[in-house]
Image (cartoon, rainbow, N blue to C red; front, side, top):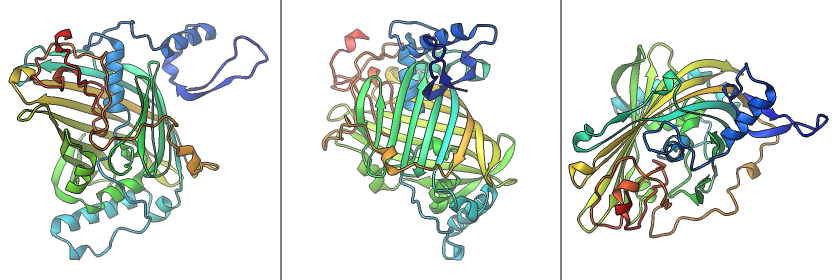
Length: 427
């Protein structure tokens, strides 16, 4: 990945250090350096009028959806940052919990051991992503009006890069750029926040939580702490690996803290699939159900499922870190009548280019939220309004203030982009 931008105005000028490195794929080998950088400049310009193959009619609409859902989702509950070993007294717990604690102990050993994991005070990771919305279906049982496009495995999708800094599970900062659109997200230990080109900075409801991307093989200590209170529910073969399944349900109090008067998070469950052969995390999955009250009696439901396959473990300073993986997302809307049902599928493939630990000079000041951060009001959820994004098909909505067809660019953990305008006729 390219970290420097040449100075074409002055030959003796210094190169510009890029905030987010640019994937090497943006520089075709058969073109000159200047032409390649012109392509990059065009790539970096987010033009709402540009068009490309997209199941959402507009490329920018699809990018907003991808960044909102796949860009920076959070783990559903806080993760403690203590460095004490997992409770060795497993006999005092039910068999399912005891088995889970034993599996987590094996995972810690496979990831590098207590000593190696406890020596990590901070982390830096840089990588590239390719993401796309691969399918949209609407209508009864979501079998009508289905549209599919070429997946990321076959070269489709939007390219981008990201940089992640982390000091503790609740102290982190992510910058992600995909096709000229940049999303920034982070947590200072008090509040988790997010900033996008199409919305002001806004805070998440509830206590600060870790970034899901960090637990996709980059932060073994937080992964172990997350599943230390889980239960083992069985076995399953994932990617030709026999795995133990650990399940973790989010407590009602945590769900209530993230909900509001009109938006209720009904459940959020996390599963970890740990290899019986290596002890390492093979897949991280979670599903969460959201209810939006559209009127006194009617509600709209959104169920989001994310499955991340974690691959290519390499040893960095004695710690096993995953360097590649794929995430598949299903966003299902139901409620009201069957014609208003819809399902959207998204994909992401990522590769880690650099990882380093114990970054000198990385202080808590590096994780401060933006100055224009908007706090969540007491009556509403952390809802951001976007009136320019549309789904590709007209989906009749109930007679309510919530437009069912315009819930787009949804951050499945924090921000539900609900347009309250009564302008469904535009769709």
